[in-house]
Length: 394
Image (cartoon, rainbow, N blue to C red):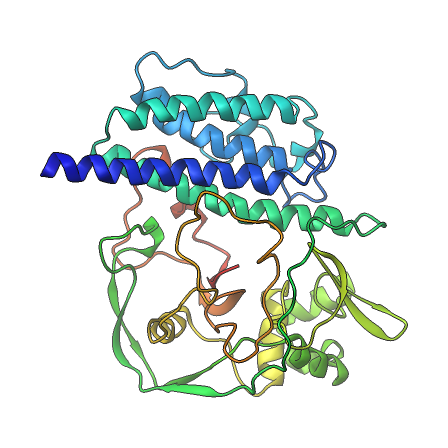
């Protein structure tokens, strides 16, 4: 019976691996070779780099050490597509990834096929718990890069004066945004952190207790309509609303609206993966900095929640993702849908899904946090400084 259960678990893991790999290629399919090579700023990576880097992860951490006789596709790819793993070796500078015109997208496709074939052989051999955990981490890692792929190409396309459309937007459900209400939590000593036997990133461990004072959290995300009221009240022109560093950014960078918003003939428009669209007041607002979120909260007579408050409130909801989808992709996912948050209409959007949300908590280790051994221990631990925690989903 144990052997049968292990075989079934390996088969499910293999199916999820191949489904995730297919989805990456489906997301890249609408993009030309030129689209996939451009790097529009240092924090954006080219699409083909995302495709190659996720592949390099499986090759480096699974195939090379664990599949006897495996042949590395190209020894130079380790230098080009390593992201930040110092223990693995030197890497090409991140701000210059857009300069790498070769290999092209066809060779990247060959690389992915080569690794996928070898991973299929490894999965067919059966996996021990450690290898299965690395495959799971690789799947989760590639899903993160699927999100990054879309975020990054959105920035690339937004700088094109022709306002190109990545994919046709899904139809919008009619209706007006639900009024904002508040859920009160009594506070007290509560556990936070990963719970259960499912996958968790290392920075979600260990589960531990925190003390919370009573608080309330809004039952829906801030909408574009809410943000328009903030704009109409000169939110970007009132220094008393802003942290000092945020006010400096407003003045030095000329912020006067969220990223991707622009005004034409007195009307606000927003660039989306479906092209430029009029700002929909019923959709959650997107692409705002921590400083903007903090200033808006202060303007609204509120504050940003701590990550512990957010997590405790999230656990009280039945659909924490907000979009009603499963945790993992199926064999295919149409890229013409779910590329922008749905309007907050009649419970169609959750305060805990559809958009990433700022908290007031610094990104630091939980009490008792221990990084994983080896190079994969660099996944999160060394970045726990000078950042704030985002929760939610995208």
